[in-house]
Amino acid sequence: MFKQFTIQAPLTAIEAELQQKIDGKTKPLGALGELENIAFQLGRIQQTSTPNVSNAKMVVFAADHGVVAQGISLFPQEVTPQMVMNFLMGGAAVSVFCEQHHVPLRVVDVGVNAELDEHPLLGDRKVAFASKDFSQEAAMSAEQVAQSIQAGVDEADLAIDDGANLLMFGEMGIGNTCVSSCMMTALIGVSATDSTGRGTGLDSAGVSHKAQIIEQSLRRAELATGQVMSEWSAQTLAEQVGGFEILAMAGAMLQSAQRQTAFVVDGFICSVALLFAQKVVPNVREYAIFAHQSNEKAHKMLLSHLSAEPILSLDLRLGEGSGAILAYPLIKSACIFLKNMASFESAGVSDSK
Image: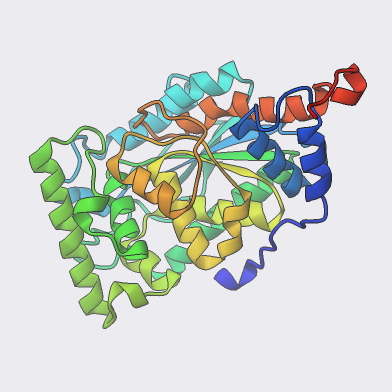
C-alpha cells in the first residue's frame, strides 16, 4: 500500500533566488517574520519566485470509532452524522469560514456510522460503519487500512486535478482525539497520560479514564502482534489503533506531497495524521504548513517533535479544519508580499549599509 509513495524533497536550486527576493523587499531583514518563512517554503514547493495559493480547497474527512463504547467522549456517536449534515448545510465553523474566504469545502464520509443522504458537497468513500473498538480488538483490517489511505489519495488527486494549489484538511469523528492520542503514544513513545487531553471537554476523571483506555488498548495490541509498539510498522499501527478519517488525511497528505502541492495542517488530530504520514515517508513534512497550536495539551509537544512553527495560537480546540481556514488569509498574504511588495531597487529606497 505505502510503496506507491516516493516523495522527493523540493529542489533547492531556487532557494538563493527566493531568499534574495524576500530580503530585497522594502523592509528590514526578517521584519515580516513567519510570513517570510511561509513565502520561502511555498516558493520552494512550487519552484517559483511568485507562489500562488489562490485556488485553495478544504477537505474534511469524517468517520466514527468503536472505542467510544468505552465512554471516552462526552458526546454520543450520533453527533458525527449530525455534524456532517451541519457542514453540508453551511452551519459549522469551517463552513462559514470557508464561505468567508471563498474556499470550496468538501466533506468525505470514510466511516460514519450512519447512512448519509447524497449531497453535492459530500464524497462517499465509506470504508465501514465505524472502526472496531480497539480496546478489545484491532481497529481495522489490512484491506480497510488500504481503503482509508486510498480515499485520501483519491481526494487529493480530485482537488489537484481540478486546479487546487493549496489543500487544507479537517476531520470530524466523535472519539477521534482518543484515537489520535493512542496513535501519538505508539508513534513517538510518550505516555498515554502525556498524550491525552480533554477533547470535547472531559473533566479530570474523564481524561484519566481515557488515558487508561489508551494504555489498555496498546497493551492488548502489543500482545496481539507479539511486538512492542516501538517496533510496529505503519501498517501494523494503523490496523491496531488507527482511525479511518485520520488515515485518509494521511493518505491525502502523502499524495499532495507526491504531487508537489503544499497542504495546511490543522490541529492536534490533523498533526497526528501528519506524524503517521511521516512514518511512511519522512519527506512529506517538507510540504506541510502548520496552521495553529491548539488548546489540546499534547499538541504543543507534538508540534515540537515535528519542529513545527504554527502560524496561530488562538486556544482553539474545535478541529474540523477551523484553524487551517483561519490561517489561510495569512498564507495568502505571504504570497502577496512576495509578488507585489516593492523592492528597494524598484521603489528607489536606500537599502541598509
